[in-house]
Image (cartoon, rainbow, N blue to C red; front, side, top):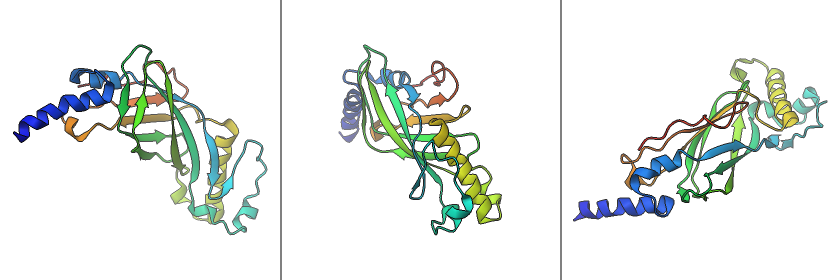
Length: 205
Protein backbone atom coordinates (compact mmCIF):
# COMPACT_ATOMS: atom_id res chain seq x y z
CA UNK A 1 0.00 0.00 0.00
CA UNK A 2 2.81 2.45 0.86
CA UNK A 3 4.47 1.72 -2.49
CA UNK A 4 1.22 2.40 -4.32
CA UNK A 5 0.75 5.68 -2.48
CA UNK A 6 4.27 6.78 -3.45
CA UNK A 7 3.51 6.04 -7.10
CA UNK A 8 0.41 8.22 -6.84
CA UNK A 9 2.42 11.03 -5.27
CA UNK A 10 4.87 11.23 -8.18
CA UNK A 11 2.44 12.50 -10.84
CA UNK A 12 0.92 14.87 -8.29
CA UNK A 13 4.35 16.42 -7.60
CA UNK A 14 5.05 16.58 -11.32
CA UNK A 15 1.80 18.48 -11.76
CA UNK A 16 2.84 20.91 -9.01
CA UNK A 17 5.95 21.71 -11.00
CA UNK A 18 4.09 22.72 -14.09
CA UNK A 19 0.32 22.65 -13.90
CA UNK A 20 -0.63 19.89 -16.35
CA UNK A 21 2.92 18.79 -17.19
CA UNK A 22 3.35 15.06 -17.67
CA UNK A 23 6.31 13.51 -15.87
CA UNK A 24 8.51 13.08 -19.00
CA UNK A 25 8.03 16.78 -19.78
CA UNK A 26 9.38 18.08 -16.47
CA UNK A 27 13.07 17.83 -17.39
CA UNK A 28 12.40 19.21 -20.88
CA UNK A 29 10.53 22.22 -19.53
CA UNK A 30 13.21 22.99 -16.95
CA UNK A 31 15.77 22.92 -19.74
CA UNK A 32 13.87 25.68 -21.58
CA UNK A 33 14.38 28.22 -18.79
CA UNK A 34 16.33 31.18 -20.18
CA UNK A 35 18.81 33.00 -17.93
CA UNK A 36 19.90 36.62 -18.28
CA UNK A 37 22.29 38.61 -16.09
CA UNK A 38 20.86 41.97 -15.00
CA UNK A 39 24.20 43.34 -13.89
CA UNK A 40 25.93 43.74 -10.54
CA UNK A 41 24.49 45.81 -7.68
CA UNK A 42 25.45 46.90 -4.16
CA UNK A 43 29.20 46.21 -4.34
CA UNK A 44 30.65 46.32 -0.83
CA UNK A 45 33.40 45.12 1.48
CA UNK A 46 32.07 44.89 5.01
CA UNK A 47 30.04 48.05 5.60
CA UNK A 48 31.98 50.02 3.00
CA UNK A 49 29.89 50.46 -0.17
CA UNK A 50 31.37 51.19 -3.57
CA UNK A 51 29.90 53.20 -6.43
CA UNK A 52 31.16 53.83 -9.97
CA UNK A 53 32.51 57.26 -8.98
CA UNK A 54 34.77 56.08 -6.15
CA UNK A 55 38.01 55.52 -8.03
CA UNK A 56 40.47 57.32 -5.78
CA UNK A 57 40.24 55.07 -2.73
CA UNK A 58 43.24 55.18 -0.41
CA UNK A 59 44.16 51.67 0.73
CA UNK A 60 46.26 52.91 3.63
CA UNK A 61 43.40 55.02 4.97
CA UNK A 62 41.11 52.02 4.86
CA UNK A 63 43.70 49.85 6.60
CA UNK A 64 43.92 52.31 9.46
CA UNK A 65 40.15 52.74 9.72
CA UNK A 66 39.67 49.58 11.78
CA UNK A 67 37.37 47.88 9.26
CA UNK A 68 39.70 44.86 8.93
CA UNK A 69 38.89 44.61 5.24
CA UNK A 70 41.68 42.14 4.58
CA UNK A 71 39.67 39.25 6.03
CA UNK A 72 36.41 40.03 4.22
CA UNK A 73 35.16 39.14 0.73
CA UNK A 74 33.74 41.46 -1.90
CA UNK A 75 29.96 41.11 -1.58
CA UNK A 76 27.65 41.88 -4.48
CA UNK A 77 23.98 41.42 -5.33
CA UNK A 78 23.49 39.62 -8.63
CA UNK A 79 19.98 40.03 -10.11
CA UNK A 80 19.18 37.13 -12.42
CA UNK A 81 16.27 37.12 -14.88
CA UNK A 82 14.62 33.73 -15.41
CA UNK A 83 12.01 33.18 -18.13
CA UNK A 84 10.10 30.49 -19.98
CA UNK A 85 9.08 30.86 -23.65
CA UNK A 86 5.62 32.32 -24.28
CA UNK A 87 2.88 29.73 -24.40
CA UNK A 88 4.66 27.14 -22.26
CA UNK A 89 3.15 25.76 -19.03
CA UNK A 90 4.09 27.36 -15.74
CA UNK A 91 6.81 25.79 -13.59
CA UNK A 92 7.48 26.23 -9.87
CA UNK A 93 11.04 25.44 -8.86
CA UNK A 94 11.78 24.32 -5.31
CA UNK A 95 14.95 26.43 -5.50
CA UNK A 96 18.34 25.72 -7.11
CA UNK A 97 22.05 25.29 -6.48
CA UNK A 98 24.33 27.73 -8.27
CA UNK A 99 28.01 28.14 -9.07
CA UNK A 100 29.76 31.26 -10.34
CA UNK A 101 33.14 31.71 -11.98
CA UNK A 102 34.46 35.26 -12.45
CA UNK A 103 37.84 36.03 -14.07
CA UNK A 104 40.20 37.28 -11.38
CA UNK A 105 38.18 35.79 -8.53
CA UNK A 106 37.96 32.44 -6.79
CA UNK A 107 34.96 30.25 -7.82
CA UNK A 108 31.99 30.56 -5.49
CA UNK A 109 28.70 28.74 -4.99
CA UNK A 110 25.41 28.98 -3.13
CA UNK A 111 21.86 27.73 -2.84
CA UNK A 112 18.41 29.26 -3.24
CA UNK A 113 15.84 27.46 -1.09
CA UNK A 114 12.71 29.56 -1.73
CA UNK A 115 10.15 28.42 -4.33
CA UNK A 116 10.36 30.26 -7.66
CA UNK A 117 7.24 30.48 -9.83
CA UNK A 118 7.85 30.86 -13.56
CA UNK A 119 5.15 31.62 -16.15
CA UNK A 120 5.49 31.31 -19.92
CA UNK A 121 6.30 34.65 -21.55
CA UNK A 122 6.99 36.39 -18.23
CA UNK A 123 10.27 37.20 -16.47
CA UNK A 124 10.99 36.44 -12.82
CA UNK A 125 13.92 38.12 -11.09
CA UNK A 126 15.95 36.32 -8.44
CA UNK A 127 18.77 38.16 -6.67
CA UNK A 128 21.77 36.06 -5.67
CA UNK A 129 23.90 37.24 -2.73
CA UNK A 130 27.44 36.58 -3.94
CA UNK A 131 30.72 36.72 -1.99
CA UNK A 132 33.89 36.92 -4.11
CA UNK A 133 37.56 36.72 -3.20
CA UNK A 134 40.36 37.72 -5.58
CA UNK A 135 42.27 34.85 -7.15
CA UNK A 136 45.38 33.94 -5.15
CA UNK A 137 44.53 36.14 -2.16
CA UNK A 138 45.63 33.43 0.28
CA UNK A 139 49.14 33.58 -1.17
CA UNK A 140 49.51 37.29 -0.38
CA UNK A 141 51.61 37.79 2.72
CA UNK A 142 50.67 41.29 3.85
CA UNK A 143 47.37 42.85 4.85
CA UNK A 144 48.09 45.79 2.52
CA UNK A 145 48.40 43.44 -0.47
CA UNK A 146 45.15 41.68 0.44
CA UNK A 147 43.26 44.95 0.79
CA UNK A 148 44.69 46.19 -2.51
CA UNK A 149 43.53 43.06 -4.35
CA UNK A 150 40.06 43.28 -2.75
CA UNK A 151 39.74 46.94 -3.73
CA UNK A 152 40.85 46.19 -7.29
CA UNK A 153 38.11 43.58 -7.67
CA UNK A 154 35.48 45.83 -6.02
CA UNK A 155 36.44 48.78 -8.23
CA UNK A 156 36.17 46.68 -11.38
CA UNK A 157 32.74 45.33 -10.50
CA UNK A 158 31.33 48.69 -9.36
CA UNK A 159 32.80 50.57 -12.32
CA UNK A 160 31.36 48.23 -14.96
CA UNK A 161 28.14 47.43 -13.13
CA UNK A 162 28.18 43.93 -14.56
CA UNK A 163 30.10 40.69 -14.44
CA UNK A 164 33.23 40.76 -16.62
CA UNK A 165 33.33 38.91 -19.91
CA UNK A 166 34.34 35.30 -19.39
CA UNK A 167 32.19 34.91 -16.26
CA UNK A 168 30.04 31.79 -16.10
CA UNK A 169 26.98 31.12 -13.95
CA UNK A 170 25.46 27.64 -13.72
CA UNK A 171 22.42 26.53 -11.75
CA UNK A 172 20.69 23.21 -11.16
CA UNK A 173 17.00 23.30 -10.17
CA UNK A 174 15.95 21.50 -7.01
CA UNK A 175 13.16 18.92 -7.41
CA UNK A 176 10.87 17.41 -4.77
CA UNK A 177 12.36 14.38 -3.03
CA UNK A 178 9.75 12.04 -4.60
CA UNK A 179 11.12 12.91 -8.07
CA UNK A 180 14.73 12.24 -7.12
CA UNK A 181 16.07 9.44 -9.31
CA UNK A 182 13.08 9.67 -11.65
CA UNK A 183 13.72 13.07 -13.24
CA UNK A 184 17.25 14.41 -13.65
CA UNK A 185 17.18 18.21 -13.52
CA UNK A 186 19.28 19.88 -16.23
CA UNK A 187 22.14 22.21 -15.36
CA UNK A 188 21.52 25.61 -16.93
CA UNK A 189 24.43 27.86 -17.86
CA UNK A 190 24.84 31.57 -18.54
CA UNK A 191 28.09 32.68 -20.15
CA UNK A 192 28.72 36.41 -19.79
CA UNK A 193 29.93 37.92 -23.05
CA UNK A 194 28.44 35.07 -25.07
CA UNK A 195 25.02 34.84 -26.79
CA UNK A 196 22.26 33.69 -24.43
CA UNK A 197 21.01 31.03 -26.86
CA UNK A 198 22.80 27.72 -26.93
CA UNK A 199 24.37 28.01 -23.49
CA UNK A 200 22.12 25.50 -21.79
CA UNK A 201 22.91 21.83 -21.56
CA UNK A 202 20.29 19.59 -23.11
CA UNK A 203 17.89 18.35 -20.41
CA UNK A 204 17.46 14.72 -19.53
CA UNK A 205 14.57 12.98 -17.88
